[in-house]
Amino acid sequence: MHFDIAPLDAELGRALQHKLDRKTKPLGSLGMLETVAQKVGQIQQRMDPAIAFPAMLIFAADHGLARAGVSPYPSEVTAQMVQNFLAGGAAISVLCRAHGMSLRIINAGVNASFAPHALLIDCPLARGTANSLEGPAMSLGQVYIAIETGAAVLGERAQLGATLVGLGEMGIGNTSAAALLMARLTGEPIERCAGRGTGLDDAGLARKVTILQQVLDKHAGVTEPLDVLAAMGGFEIAMMVGAYLAAAARRVVILVDGFIASAALLVASRINPAVLDYCVFSHCSDEAGHALLLQHLGAQPLLRLDLRLGEGSGAALALPLVQAACKLLNEMASFDEAGVSDSDGNDAGGKAGGA
Ligand SMILES: O=C(O)c1ccc[n+]([C@@H]2O[C@H](COP(=O)([O-])O)[C@@H](O)[C@H]2O)c1
Ligand SMILES: Cc1cc2nc[nH]c2cc1C
Figure 1 (cartoon, rainbow, N blue to C red):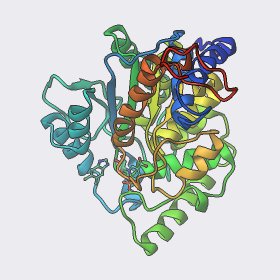
Figure 2 (cartoon, helix red, strand yellow):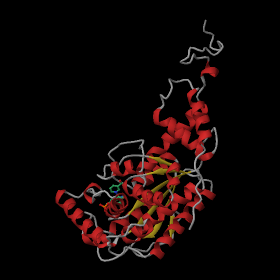
Figure 3 (cartoon, rainbow, N blue to C red):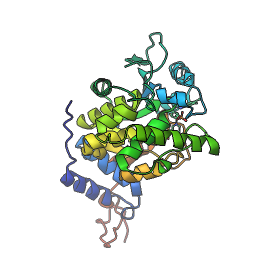
């Protein structure tokens, strides 16, 4: 399991910024869109980057820890939402249609079986993880298989021409797994990592925090990223780790979604920090720990819409911004081309006919 991720070319980055600086706008005035355009250019090693065949992958799995009562919804909802994704009725189904993204659902380990479907990639590791209150959620062997599987799924999309991927997830209880990974890998107290998830009330959140602290105590001393993932992670999260690393290794632009997606990226970044160069952070979720997690990742999210849905929704919503950033870089006139004077007062040779 090795992912060869090249660092981005700093010289190309400067050339792209120079191209942006010559566009007919005050210096830096397109803000984060300039950063995005520059990053996509560096990832694609092109002065005229473009997004072809954007793909959304939703990884779904169940969590043994959900039996402890850490979510207001029952685990059955995971399988029911997978069916909803396949039928085209979920929020992410609508957003993928609206934004021209292909969609595939990966059964990473849901506690149900599914009939074959054109949108379903059926490769479960088990019918849900074990309860991390009692022992490791999964074996180290399962972690390795999950990472390889996530990488293979990503590889297939890249081979079909995808140059950008959004990674989403579905799994009742997975805000707990994500909070546990965040707490152990960053050293933050669990109170700063755990949130209301799908909508716990104050008493429910207090109970969740108590249970998650018990899980952390059960796995005290586990600190290596893959061991932490085995002890307290989930099958969908482990597959996302492989998909992130494989996307970066293949120079595919990654749109990062919400809290769980960012926790999976945190694990991936502890395996190979260069993966972060290939990420565009779509949004800051309403889930309590997400803002702090983004800080740990050194991330500046594009949007703040108070979303707390998951399933790749924030990533799909940010896709048009990435496309717009590329088009601005490619299609805007420069000061020279438009005959507009720049900030040094250089007029561009009077093309526009100014006297
Ligand atoms: O992406 C987020 O920031 C996010 C925040 C809160 C909830 N979710 C979704 O809600 C589910 C997990 O919530 P919970 O309460 O069951 O742990 C899972 O299916 C996630 O996709 C997602
Ligand atoms: C209905 C529902 C839809 C979801 N989509 C992602 N997580 C979810 C959790 C629930 C409960």
